[in-house]
Length: 139
Image (cartoon, one colour):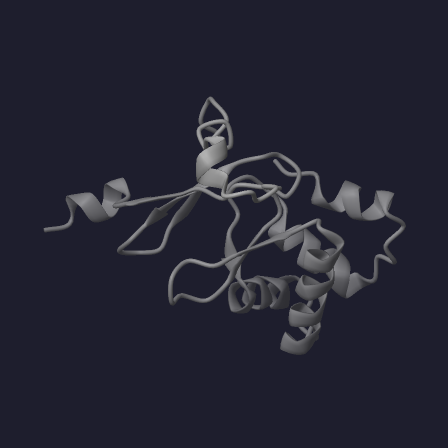
């Protein structure tokens, strides 16, 4: 389970009812919801929360570095609360399911100095694509 609420509180972020609900909806392992999915779940907990408030809150969390914005091709952006543990993503090309994966090794170490072309590399994003078990079984 992610520690998103604790991290936000530790930053002294003013925890309004709306912000708390958005953080609660996002908190957990393998959570990669769209803004609309966050809004739908937040409304179940706090019916008066607006879509604009959800979008603004997600933007603030991304700006703080507490939530990652994940883009998967032409699909809607998804929000990942697992921002402080290095990981990659495994994405189903059919249904769009996303899982966090933590393979052994360092992908940056695999990039030789010649292949860096003088860049100072600050990070690596690896995305594995395939079919999830449910989609692979569908004829």
